[in-house]
Amino acid sequence: MNALPKQVKIVEVGPRDGLQNEKETISAEVKTELVNRLTSAGFANIEAASFVSPKWVPQMATSKEVMAAIVRKPGTIYSALTPNMQGFEAALAAKADEVVIFGSASEAFSQKNINCSIAESIARFVDVAKAAKDNGLRLRGSISCSFGCPYQGEVPLEAVADVVGRMRDLGCDEIDIADTIGVATPRKTQAVMQTAIGAFRLDGLSGHFHDTYGQALANIYASLELGIAIFHSSVSGLGGCPYAKGATGNVATEDVLYMMNGLGIHTGIDLDIVVDAGQYISQVLGRKGASRAGNAIAAKRAG
Image (cartoon, rainbow, N blue to C red; front, side):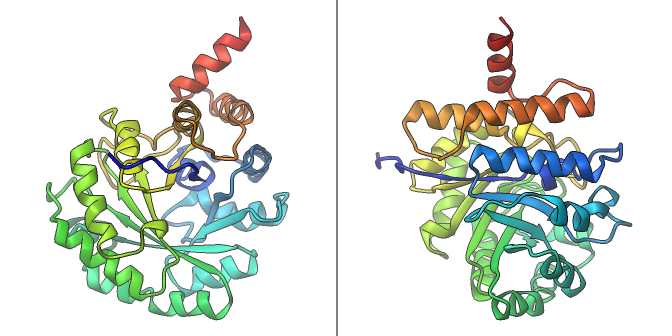
């Protein structure tokens, strides 16, 4: 077995991927407070905004205000999702450090989700990718349904390799391999990640796992065994996928940090501050958080 990485980067996606599906409107003030709490916890990368049409994702309509109000920490990357040039221009004006483009490894998901083929969807990002590079911004590519699709079921490994290659050719600095519906298990995870490693450099690949079937931590560990050292997580397990029926939330950041601490893997993140942030946003949303580690730590503190 390979030695596990000594250090990993955790990309906190709660403020964007986590909150975008909430039915009740969340104020810009609450989102700003959440990002500021996460910044103080020590995250190197926070997905803070999404410049998509408010018609499609109303919850993200306040992204401009949030990006203007957050207290930025030097060295922290604040990312924004940008589906097109209009979104890119808004992200640039909001001083995003990184723009995120997205495609799917599943042809069926691409058609159902954005009404076009995988090849067409990636082609739409050529201008965004060039503009990001011309303006000195980091470019991240996210590949949904890399481990399974709600419409077509199995996703061939060669389909994942193809999209990774397309994202690489656009100039992506980092590429996320996402389990959008949370169906992966450790062996499947390693097969998909090995495929991605064959098409892109190891230190630029990240794992984005959902915990629908309770496999996210096991899949993160399976990825660690291959040398993957970037993972996405969402404070208090916020979020899911609005287009994937039955897909529950992202893996909870508190749970990932608890595991990393136990493995002796350095993250640079203060778990206690993250637990506080998780309790804060859960109280705002009026429900118990989805992080088992976070809830256990909070309960222990309360005596």
